[in-house]
Image (cartoon, rainbow, N blue to C red; front, side):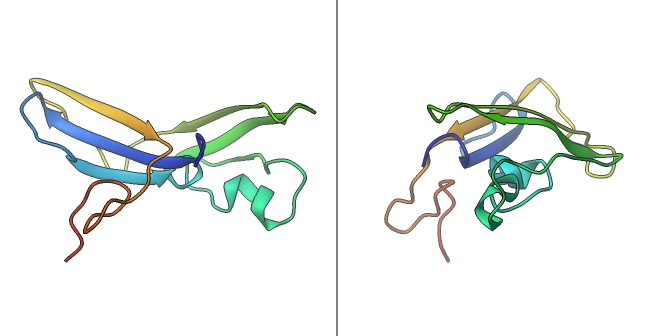
Length: 108
């Protein structure tokens, strides 16, 4: 749960139904990282990185557990083309429901 797990959904137009196109299933996945930006791999805080298309430029955790991060992702190689008021939504804390993934996509 928390903010790290969830779904990024892209909608090309205003009439596109849920779930649209799922473009990520976790914050770190969307920004081309993994394992909670390295924290789940045993690091004390997230591992910053920078590439031409994505990066994590800041990861801070306070003693009381709050986190602050700054990340970027460019869609040069995988453009998200919008028309008629498209949008990108971020739903955090997702959990699966019977017959669907945590992002609302039916399981075949």
